Amino acid sequence: MRIERTIICLALLALAGCGKSKPVTVAEPEKVQTPAPQAEKSATATPAKVAMPRLDACSLLTSEEVQSVLGEPVKETKPSGRSQPAMEIAQCYFALPTPSKSMVLTVFSKGASGDAHELREVWEEMFHREHPEKEHERGEEGEKKSKPEKVEGVGDEAWWTGNAVGGVLYVLKGDKYIRVSVGGPDDKAGKMKKSQAIAELVLKRL
Image (cartoon, rainbow, N blue to C red; front, side, top):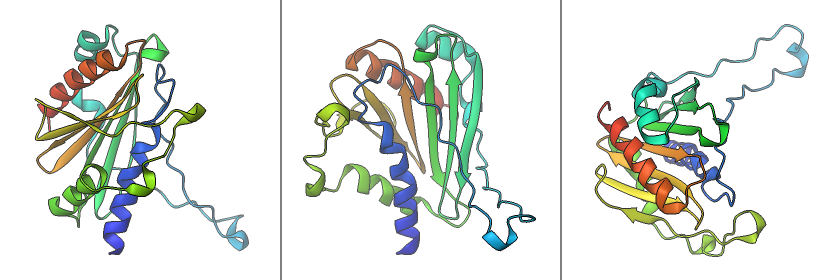
């Protein structure tokens, strides 16, 4: 039970940005924080290092591929992530010359002591189990969040989450799933189309 709770919490971290009412900008990947040293050892203790994932998410897309979808080449990439026994999360922020058009790619895969079944359990928790207590959940400025929308034709299964303006795409493929969040001025349909194109490129390398 402890492992299941851990991997579910890790996976649900990525949902934090799904209901933003102004998605024309893409937040940079979350900074991995290390625990503060104990007070009595503050002068000499070294903060514990966060284990990084084995996968480099930034290697899954080339600048040319990003430009073919988002219209601009990659100016800079910023990898981040964390590795837990049950699950690894590899993330990359693709910074474009126009900051609001930048994108974030996150890859979730089983950890060293995890298995595909546990990862599938996380997926089931997010998209196939009802959560009545969250039905009236609202985003910023009081806008009601929409239920996940099934997306056909990409990966083993895909869902779009967000609101009428924009959101993020989750795609399951084998023993991994990815999260794609693109910026830019496009409406929901435009963002869905670009996110799916990015996902298809990424899945070729997973």
